Length: 451
Ligand SMILES: Cc1cc2nc3c(=O)[nH]c(=O)nc-3n(C[C@H](O)[C@H](O)[C@H](O)COP(=O)(O)OP(=O)(O)OC[C@H]3O[C@@H](n4cnc5c(N)ncnc54)[C@H](O)[C@@H]3O)c2cc1C
Ligand SMILES: Cc1cc2nc3c(=O)[nH]c(=O)nc-3n(C[C@H](O)[C@H](O)[C@H](O)COP(=O)(O)O)c2cc1C
Image: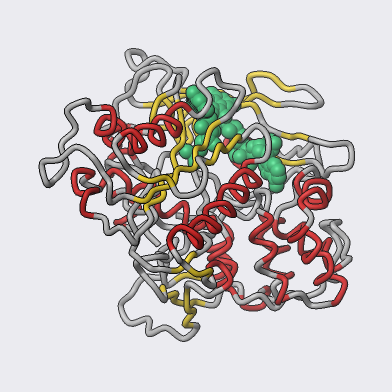
């Protein structure tokens, strides 16, 4: 399947494949690398899928600007000199948020313009609304696309996310290789993995100072100053700085325990992609289980319904299997029991097996999910953005941010959800100001050592 994603052409496989969150994230930076003038060369038996989000006030993301300009150009010229795409079979899934006035403007524009220039839409234009249920919007669009690809293009359903993308080698030759314990690689720095275009834009910064701007029983607002002296960065007040979090000790240890990896947490392994055109290993290797969970994969966010469906065959008990099967077929059950309670992967696996969510509990049912499946099912940990509130004229060598520490109970029945980066900043603030007092005993603790 050809999958042009806010994102990229993969390869022509007459097989439908379900993309895991990790794969979708890896595809993101690639859209800007294509020459759209050759869209007239895409074979008619291929399908090009665009996943397009809208930002700003109805604007494209940086990596989609070229595509949008290309499609909007009245004098658009393709590689053969023509201006129409009768060969192209396409589908668009739009990602936006209905609280914005220009809801999904860019995705809708791409969809409309492709039709205007003669391309054939397969399935429906998907309208994803982050404010409601983005994953369910995606599933509806994808199911329609699957049906249309079968009927209009004669494709067959493939194995998709249920087949392995990676192979783990737990006895790698270590030779002179370094072991990655949270560091980023050259390709992280040059943007092919995480979307940064300029290596100078990624910088390990020391916290100069961090204090509370205000705090009450419910909230903290942290003011933090980061040293950028050696970074060669310049900035304007109001620019956004991305801060990369790490996962909390409690989430890491619990998941290691559930997956029966606790005793192997520092074991070094290598990972190989079984199909590098489709799935790239989302973190540098060789590495260790605990490094992957601490630094590289997002293990704190809501687990998508499709991911859980893929774990049915690894359920350790009948009860756990029945729970995951119900999630797979009953989106209301998923919404009530998982989404509204803000369950991350660890929470769901414990609940499915009937184990306690109490972090002090030590008896967990082990889930024998191959680690390569966990990699496929997870997104890469990503930075969160903060508006710079310092003035470059007064502070050319530091950026200052103010962050409200997130601690939500989104639903009466849900657990308290601690925002990852903001609570990491809270830990950093405590460390730099030598505070010992933790007001909330459940507040996550983060290891502040590391690369
Ligand atoms: C351009 C831009 C500028 C910004 N500037 C600022 C700024 O100056 N100051 C500031 O404080 N913030 C700012 N933000 C917001 C900031 O980027 C973060 O989104 C915010 O701090 C929360 O990040 P976090 O990692 O702590 O929370 P996350 O871990 O990302 O969680 C955020 C929310 O997601 C939900 N969530 C988390 N886990 C789950 C789960 N398991 N299930 C369901 N829901 C879950 C919860 O509602 C939670 O509150 C800005 C955002 C953008 C896009
Ligand atoms: C600063 C900002 C501006 C946004 N503007 C719009 C908008 O104009 N229209 C819209 O539909 N969604 C808008 N959104 C919502 C994003 O499209 C939404 O968060 C989406 O999930 C982003 O997906 P991505 O991170 O995968 O690109 C905006 C989000 C942010 C943070």
